[in-house]
Length: 178
Image 1 (cartoon, rainbow, N blue to C red):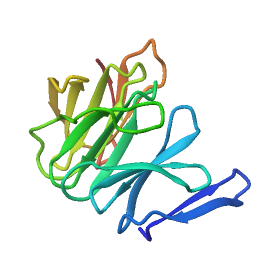
Image 2 (cartoon, rainbow, N blue to C red):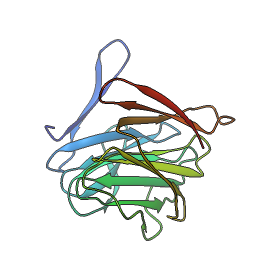
Image 3 (cartoon, helix red, strand yellow):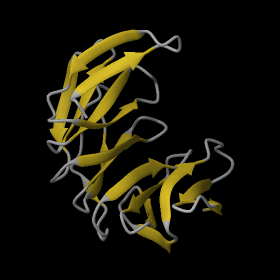
């Protein structure tokens, strides 16, 4: 919330810190290869950084504050979502840098809490502020809508099990197969 990025080792020692210049940093995500990270900002941008804090690239992601970002497992795509019902997917080049126009993911109800790729990377989910989960393909086609009262979601890392877990406000956990 203070517009700073900090990287810590497992011993609790800070190994890097820098100012992101995004009004505030709402989320940070390491790339799948661990060589860079992305930050989601209140200023509507996503920025890519090396692990020393050098900015590699940036792009205007969505209108309004970016609340969630997620890399596809192969690192070829980045999804971003925000507080104003916007979500989209971008193809990335090797730098990392955006190399395509966004594929919009429309139809959300207000804040989008999270966006997550499946373990294989062929689907992603969005979870909006009305606790609705939407499942999308990479072309932006809505595959399924699940109204379930969820406040959190996570895909299994097992590439052989296309499933995800949800948690509700009252603590119920659900497992879902795609």
